[in-house]
Image (cartoon, rainbow, N blue to C red):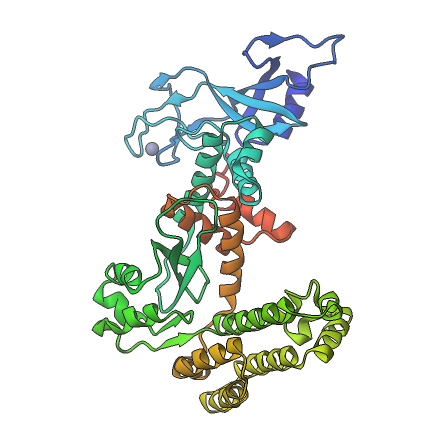
Length: 446
Ligand SMILES: [Zn+2]
């Protein structure tokens, strides 16, 4: 194909292979001839016939195999990334080789796809990337592929990543309960998620949120794994601690409550108080309080000047809410204490203030903080790395809003782990994502 073939080969960019021929087809596989030499329908499919440039490599061991092929297979097709909006397919008849090195009758190594796959690797990576930020049905429409193809591509991308990541020893364990959302009819409305606090990755998901659920996971650990655990950080849900304490092999591991959940509990008290106040509020107060639902949960130093102004006005009209907000601010500070003594001191001061409150939400917070006092103060001693818990929570909420795999906990877990470990927030994240688990390019055959 001369110059044209060279350009097409360059665009295709598969090392060791060239584009031998190219033609257009309609959706039924019938060839299309361009009108006036140039105009093809928008839904025309570009078919690229590929040819190998050098000796074949064994798909099993990657050794170069010279000599006649064992057998030439039928022409096969692979979906590739769209070319300027046109669906594109690669066509090639792979050879079955007699490999001298490994002795296999293996299909030759293809630069674009893994064995038995019907899409190029790079298309699968893009499908997976899109599937993490879009509903699967949108991705399917965008690429004119079936829903199942998208799901499989996603699972392949996750599998490739899983196979290339190092195995880490579990030392600090996070245990958390999660609501599955409204849109399902499952018996259990909650799941329990166990995660590795050091890298933030979720490890296990179980139905329910009782002691029995967590015990199920604990039962999967060996004595050696249990001995390696140095700490558990849980939310303030008592059954989790009960399950851990019921296991004598874990007696050495302290159970602490991570700051994220302590503050969340305090936030719930403030929200409840705000609701009660506005339930019988004057028109003036209602007007000021409109849209402050999230504002009263935010830390003062993370609030904009404009919002601070609104909060000041709200608090000047209602002292009860002002004091509750202040208590949460103090709690936030107390939880940052560098050691056990100062954490204990700070927390006692918060308790002193909540004790005097006569309203029910703050009393409830008081009782809750007091009953979990030891596990909260233990934070100052052990300092579990809980910063990633918030990222996990964010990913969970995105997943639950979109996921259809509620019943398939394994899929949900793998996807959650994958998105937590591979955040896509910027260009570098996207590049990293698209390259995940891809093999290093093979060297040119000499
Ligand atoms: Zn081989």
